[in-house]
Structures are given as C-alpha cells and as structure tokens.
Image 1 (tube, rainbow, N blue to C red):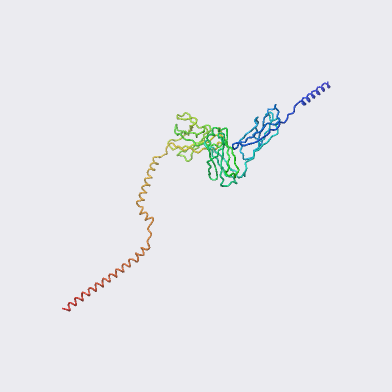
Image 2 (cartoon, helix red, strand yellow):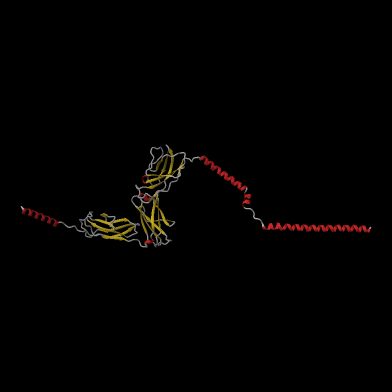
Length: 423
C-alpha cells in the first residue's frame, strides 16, 4: 500500500510543477513619453503626455498620477491632467501607466515633471492675504507688503474665474492703514457658486517683488449684507419681528441673531436663531424672502428696539464665521412718562431763549462788571495837577482886578481933590 501512495504523491507534485511552469510572468509596463507642463489663466496648471512607446495593442492603458507628496491620486484613461494650484512653491506631478485600474499590478516607471516657483525674493511677496465676498456682489481682497518690499511699491491685482473670458486687472486699489487692498465686481460668479474658484495674482508694476498667487473658493469667506426689518407688531403678549433676507441669499443658507432692547432693561438680549419662522399668523409673507421671529413676554407700554444680523451656515457654505453688519434698528411701543418728557422738551428751549434775551439786555452792564475799565494814569495825573494850576490863575486874575480897581479909585479921588482946590 505504501508504493501506490508514494506514486500518487509524486504524480501530484509533477502536475503542480507543470502548472507553475506554464504561467506567464507579469511584465512591467513602459513609461509615458513627452510629459510636459504649462500654465493657463493664472493658476491652472496643465500636464500632458503621450502613451508609452511600443505598448501592446491588447493593453487598455490607464494612467496613474499624483503629486510629489503622493497626494491627490488620480487614475484616468486621458493623457492629460489639469489642476488649480497656487504657484508660490515648486509643484511636481508623477505619471505612470498600466493595463488596468488595479493598483496591485506592476505599473510603469514613474515620470515626473515640475513647475518652478515665480522668480524673486520670497520675502518681498505680499503677506496676510485674504479675500471676502460681500453679499455675493463684490470681492474685497487685502494684504500687507512683504518684509523686503519697498514702501512705495505700486501693487496690481489680477483675477480670473470661469465666467470670465480673460484675466482682468482690479482697478480699485486702496489703502487702509498698513493694509493694501482692491475690490472688484463678482456678481456673475454666483451662478457657479459650488463649482468654481477665483484665481488671483498680486504683483507690482515694476516687477521688483515676487508675485503672489491665491485660489479663493466661492463657498468660503462670504459676508452677507444686512437684512431689512419690515414690520414689528404685538400679538397675544408677544412681539413679532418680520424681516427680509439680504439679496442673493436663501433662508436655508443663513443663521440669524436678533438683538432685543427694552427701555426697562440696561443690557440687550441676544437671540441666536437657526430657523426663523412664525406659524398661524395672518400677515403677508413670502416663504423665501420674508422671515419671522417671535420674542415672548414683551410689554407694549415700553419702548422696544430690535435689530438683526445674519451669517452663512455650513449647509451652503464652507465658512460660517462672518456676520453681516447690523440692520437699521426699528422700535415699537412708547416710553413711560412720555408726556413729561415732551413737556420738558418744550419748556427747556423757552427757558434757554428767555435767558439769552436777559443776557443780551444786560450785556453792557455785565460787561462792565466782568471786565471793569482800566484807569488812565494820564487822566489821573491831569486831575491831580491840572486843577491846582487853574486855582493859581484864578487868584492871579483876582489880584490884578483888585489893583486896577484901587488905581481907578485913587484917580477919581485925586481929580475930586483938584476940583475942590481950584474953587
């Protein structure tokens, strides 16, 4: 029994060896050829290549590609790949080919092609670059000058997105303190909100600084405009607020903050609202444009002031941190003791007007009291010595008069004596 068993084992071993000898070894695919790279628009990098030379006609070629850090892997039958990439650093793409989409098979040798960063001193490029899309109407970008950039550098911003036929230059350059910025219209881009980006390049006119590139997703850094309060009214002890969303936004894409201020409280109350709606109310409303919110337990005999702001949410946008400006405040109700305040507002101007008239009437006297006249030394001196000279002249005139009178009297007496003597 042992010999037949050994013969069966030997026969099985020979069959296995024969099967292995008949297997065809997997061959490594040839590499792609003529790999090249080019830049379109501002930040669209395009790699193109040709199929491997001598590829088997029975091989259905697929191309694997990834960047130098083995990220963003992609497999496709096309002989090209394009990506929107900021060109501030060296970017390399590696491409390989094989006859199937199975990564476990042996691909060809990887072929690499790189694109160099822009020329210039890296320390001269702009820093702290950011862009905000205001109300889906215009984009406002700002930055700080580079460390090694001249203070008198004249900056230029270029932008492009898919709804534009060509790269455009931003004309509205401005300065706010140390920051420099530019704003440009971006209304048509809202039609491509979830599909495309805005490519931006900042450089100087003289070409002395290193260009800076940035790609801004349309779903990030969106700041809505302020809402508009349409109506305030009381019902069943509650205050209802109606407002319109900012233009270009849907209610499902926004969160709200309602600030409520009552004349009897010192600090306002903030309500954070994710879903704003009022049910079973009889007022005109549009489900898409008009929003409603109820503030409970509000007294109608007090002055109540409301204002609202909004921000985007994660259902529609990537960024949910940029609040809009506050809406214009709207008030309802009345201040307590309003009659007293109105009376005071009428009486105070009358009192002030009367006081002004009295002041004008007694202005001269008040002027003398407040600013008394300064004595004139010359006049004082004249009064002291001028009066004394007048008295002296008076006495001199009196003496002359007495002397003349006496002489006239003596003459008369002498004449009378002579008359008597002659008789």
